[in-house]
Length: 242
Image 1 (cartoon, rainbow, N blue to C red):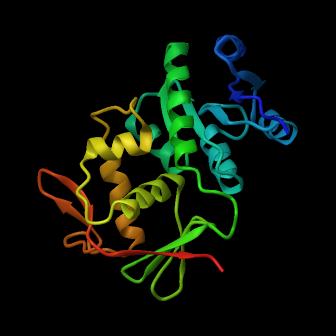
Image 2: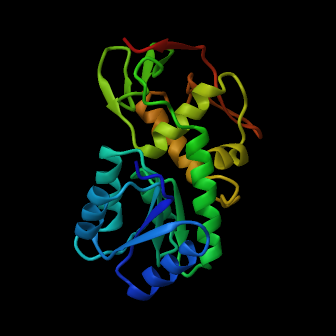
C-alpha cells in the first residue's frame, strides 16, 4: 500500500508547479504535478494522494468544475489557488467543496502551513470507512446521512449538500445547543489560517438554512444569537447504519 505523503499540484503555470513541488519535497511530501484537468484525473488514477492543490484558472475545465467533480467522487481534501482576490471566488470554491482557499501571489511556506492545517483537520474529523460505525444524525425530523453525505428531509426527499454545507452542518450537529461564534466556526471549517474578516460563514449558514427550509426571518433550527453567533437549537440523536 502506498503510504507516502503525496500531494497533487494542478496548475498550468510550469514555474509555480516546479517551485511548489520542490518546496514540498524538501518538507517531507512527495509532490506530483499536473497542468490541467486531464492530467489531474490521470494522476489520481495512478497514485494515492493525501491532498490536491488546485488552481482555479486552468485551460479546459476550470478549478471550480474539477473541484465539484472530484468532490462527487471523493472526500480528498482540496486547497484552491487563484490569481483573483474577490470574496465571491473564495465562496464559490468553498461551495464546490474546497477545504481552503489561497489567493496568488503567496509564499510557499504559507501553502505548506495550510496543507498541514487542512490535513490535521480532515484527519482528526475523518469518519471510519467501516459501515458498522458510520452514523446517521437525526434532528428536527431531518436526517444527515454521513455515508452518502446528504440530507433526508422529513418528507423523505433527499437534499444534496455542497462540501462546505456538509462540514458546517456536521459541526453544528456535533455541538447542539451550544453557541458558536464566527471565529469558532471559521477555525473549525478552515483552521487557524482562516481570515478573521471572512463573511462566507454567514453566506454558508444562509444557504444551509434554505436547504433546511427555514423561515429566514425566524429560523428554528439554526438560530442567530445577537452579538454571539449561531446555535443549533434542537436535539440531535445518532443512529448506526443498517
